[in-house]
Length: 283
Ligand SMILES: [Zn+2]
Image 1 (tube, rainbow, N blue to C red):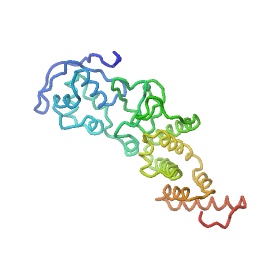
Image 2 (image 1 turned 135 degrees about the vertical axis):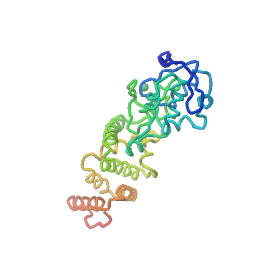
Image 3 (image 1 turned 120 degrees about the vertical axis):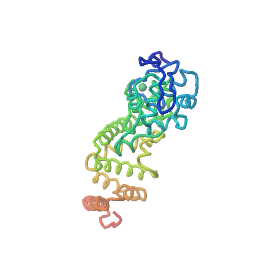
Image 4 (image 1 turned 30 degrees about the vertical axis):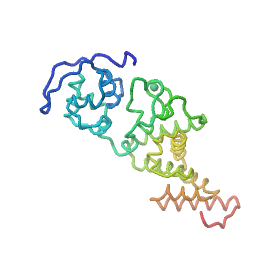
């Protein structure tokens, strides 16, 4: 582990009673790196003190909790106990979690690690932004984040797809931060459509966090394609209609029949214009 990841903390080493539990500072403190995730930092803290995370949490007096659960649900009592044991500010403990997110941000933030940075993950380091569905490049070193299971070499994918997915990730971040339900619907409709075209089932939010590189990249690329004239693009896709395209359309516009009707009308007009099978009635 790099020496930069284990450094003495400055706060008082005095024991304190918190909620009826006597909390004592640990022999070794570990200074969190910027944007570090609480559970990853607790693992590093435990390793530096030569114990397991579960033992560490027991020692602190929050043994009933799993470290990963604290990332999304932590109370002030637990934050205070951790802060005394590790000699850091309780507000800093809270800043390492995902507490209090808006719905869009929450649904686009993974509960479990799905990607990592091969350069920075040594020593158990885990950064908060790696959990975001829109995180594409590591903010610490700049390298592309890779699926957890794939961190040694990365799957072979085309550069064009990677670039489109990176652009889609930027759009997704803007949508998540805006809190706009309409923008989020548009982005997720594009993902659902892309999934349908690839005969993929399941929740589109999970597809964006897929450990399978191609699925995640394809879904992110679909987000950027939906930013301009998405209905015309859907109609173009449906020109060469097959079962998958139709099912994809139905899934993507499931809750918006008026939009689906518009896609059908555009496709019909296009078909008339090119003199193809204009009388076809299935789209
Ligand atoms: Zn990195």
